[in-house]
Image (cartoon, rainbow, N blue to C red; front, side, top):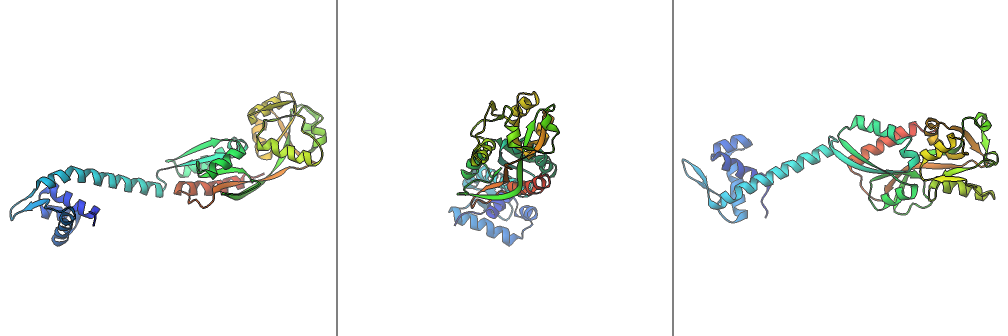
Length: 299
């Protein structure tokens, strides 16, 4: 049998007050219950910890040895108990999230602001990485949550759809195409094309859609960052195409977005979870916020 927290609390109360009566008052225990706890602890450890007479209580040498250990053990126990209570009630916590850049730079900040307003003491770490890295980080449990396009295979992960997103044309503000109600790919590809570098999923989706219709994607400029692509378009270097969820970012950079068709490129965006993994309380709360805020903001 191992000693219990109840037994240690009983011993500490008596050792600190050197009085069974005062210890009973502190712990709200009866004398028999307190005596039974002390006796059980002594039997577990194999010897007397207290010497009790009709007038006094004092510690044995073994009791003196146990006293500082008991203080430390109970302090650690109480700290652990409080820490977990705070995490379960979201008064404290930490969660890691991976998101593809088109989400991280556009829709995610609003969701995180909502989450922060509800749970101001929960820390969120955001990994802004390409789509495939999002899925890999979730699959290897480097993060609890991911936001990405629906993968071709869901091996080792669970994909929970949020919304469907359609690609739009990104155009310089003075381009005649910027005034059109919609643009087709033939008209768009008559201009220098600017896009993200491989292995960006945004680029891969465009290349796949155009290949199916027998067209190659002619790239004049490429960059790792969506912001750079948007700024290059706004400066008149060419045109581009991005998911519609990037519309606001492109507008802020000075470019214009117009619906794009023939072919229309559509892909589902959702939350990625590691298959079979139990989410922490903080991750579950963030997941709920993502579901409501990202779906509400869907194009």
